[in-house]
Length: 431
Image (cartoon, rainbow, N blue to C red; front, side, top):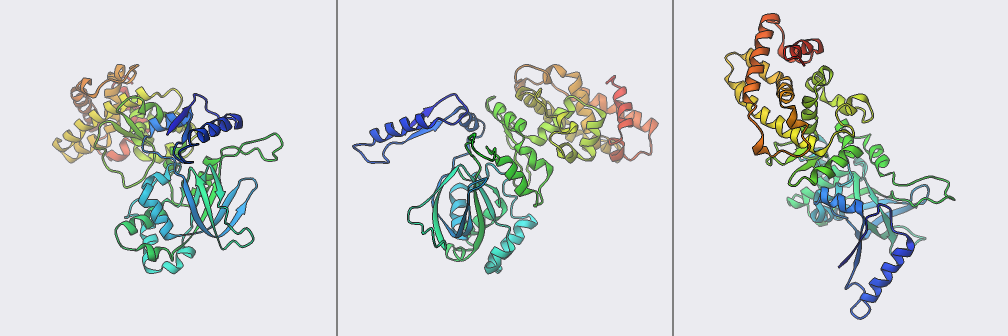
C-alpha cells in the first residue's frame, strides 16, 4: 500500500485523482488489479487519526438492501430493509467503531431502551420491523452493484464508502451483543427485518446547483436523535470546540480526551484519560463564579442546554487550551482524592456534608491559591504537582466554622447552591 498525503483540507481535484488512479493502474499492470493500492490522506484525516486512533474508515461492499428505493435531491440516499444477520456481522467486525459520528455509543444492556429491543428481538422477532425506529447511516458515497435490477427493487446490492451510524446505535449494539452471547443465531437473525437509510452527506457544490448543500452530517445527526432519549450533554460531543480539544489534547502524549457518552460511566483507570465532565468540573473550579459553582452543584445539565449560550461559552470557549484542561483536571483530581479521604473522618454528619457538598468550593479555593499551575503554558507532570492537603484542610475549617456560627440550621446541599451564600464564603478568602 502507498499513501498520498497532502497538507490541504479540501478534497483533491478530479485531475489529481485521475493521475493517482493512473499510477495505481501502472503499478498493478503486471501483478493484478488489487495488488497495490494508493490511499489518500489529507491533513484533517491525519489529525483525526492522531486524536482518535481507534477510529477507522468503514467501507462495506455488496450490502444487500431489500425493497429498496433511491432519492436524489437534495441528498442522494438509499432506503429499504436490511436483515439482522447483516447487522450482527457489522458489529462483530467493527463494534463501537460503527458509531464514530454519532453523538453517543451503545448505552449497555441495562438501559430500558436496550432491554426492550432485546425482548422484541428474542421473543417477537417478526414484529421487530414494526416496533423499531430503524437505522440511519451516513456515507461519503455509494455505488449500486451492476447486476441490480432497476425495474424491480425487491433486492439490491450496494457498496458504501466510509459508513457511520448516526441513529440506531442501541439497535445495532443490542443485536450484535445478543448474537455474540449466543442468545440468537445468524439464521434466526436473517429473518429479522430492520428499516434502514443510507444518506450521502458530502456533496460537491456547484454554481448551477439549486441547493447549497455541503457536509450537513451534524444537522442530520442532531435531527435524527431529537426524537430519542438523549441528553444535551450528548449533543456537545459534536461541538467543534470539543472536537478540537480532543485533537489538541491527544498531541500531549499520553493524554486522551473522551467526548462521547456510551456505556454506564465508570471511574477512569488511567490518570491520562479525561472526559468532558472532568473538564467541566475543573474549568469551573479553575475560574469560579458563584453562578457557575451553584449550577454545577444543582443542575450541571444546564451548561449543555445551548452550545451557543452564555453558560456553556463561559466554560468552553476558544481561550481554553489543551494545556489548561490537562493541568486543571490533574489539580482537581488530586484535590478530590484528599477530600474523599477526609469526609469519612469528620466528627459529625453535618461536617461530613460540608465536605461532600462543598467540594467544588474547596477545590476552587485551592486552585486559586495555586493559579500558576492552572495557568501554566505547558503540561505539568502529575508527579510534580504540589501537595494541596494543607490549603484544603485550612479552607474546610474556615468554612465549617463560618457555617456553624452563621447558618447552624442550614441544609448543606441547598447552602452550596445558593449564590448569595457562596458569595459570602468566597469573601472569606478575598475571592
